Image (cartoon, rainbow, N blue to C red; front, top):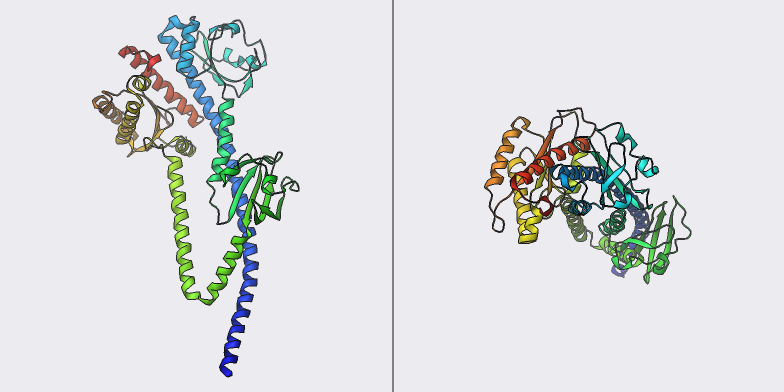
Length: 476
């Protein structure tokens, strides 16, 4: 009888302990769920804000790129002056450097030639958009690029960049329509950002338009384009700057939801209650077999932490590395140049592979890839121990050199020798144009100013290469 009573007491103690544990777990899990959701919401909004900032940075980068393209047209016209009044030839040049329009303006600011004869006669007094460039008339060292602006003639959304030619006798203006590119980039970024968000089991993340409630990003990609109410989430009660909690049946599952809204996004995090109850039941069993399951739990948590750390490191490496060449990519380049100190001593090398297009057209893209990879390996062999190599475009590279600047000219000579002696399986030879600028040679205002100066020197070498080799730069 005593044994039965002891057994009953033991069972009762276990039951009470489990009930107490269940109550504690419910309270703790509720707080943890809400806390995790709050942290995730803050993280999502932070990432989305950084994403928008990166778009603004990209626009500034585009401006620099467009000015470089305008200078490229100037160099081409210097090398081929007979093209100045040839509309067909100017249209071919525009296609070569990937711009939509080219306009040539005289010293009074009037368009006298270009790819669109209907604009001939327009000048800086014709309209507000044209008037933006009036400062060019008083400063022939100036180069300018507009934000996306409706053009004077048709109200078409354009970006225009303008520079003086080397002789300061005319201005060269290029026009590009980047709006579609930027909209597509933004459209693709939100789904990508949300899809990469690490979440706990049973949790889903949705980012929707705050007005239409249409889903723009989701960890479950099959829900993209649907409205939140179609999933069972009523978001009408959420105000801007407000965070609310609610229960809802989402995709047929009972869920706890947390919603937060700002002017641009409505973010929803859901957690399946079944997963919550399952975790509570497992935790109650842990009380009975504490030592074993506690050890297993610690190992499991350690494995999860290591896995998440590995995934983050892998994601970081992938996001900063060019897939083809294993050099730093455009993202790595933008990140690193933002950290450069204009007061410190370093060098900016702009490099470009000559004749890549001709290789792609005549021997195929496999040969072109071989040429790009060879160029990257030669650069890394010459400069990796004193700096970092980045591939920022198809055949465009940048090297930031921070060490042994006094030996840079000697290294460049060795680099040219390596390039000249290279021979591949699909391509016979390689040529690389380069130009570099030292941070100490001038009181620069920004790294972008240095990069433009390096690009100019590189394009001068490229133009010289095409003149000396007799290769048609339009086909290269």
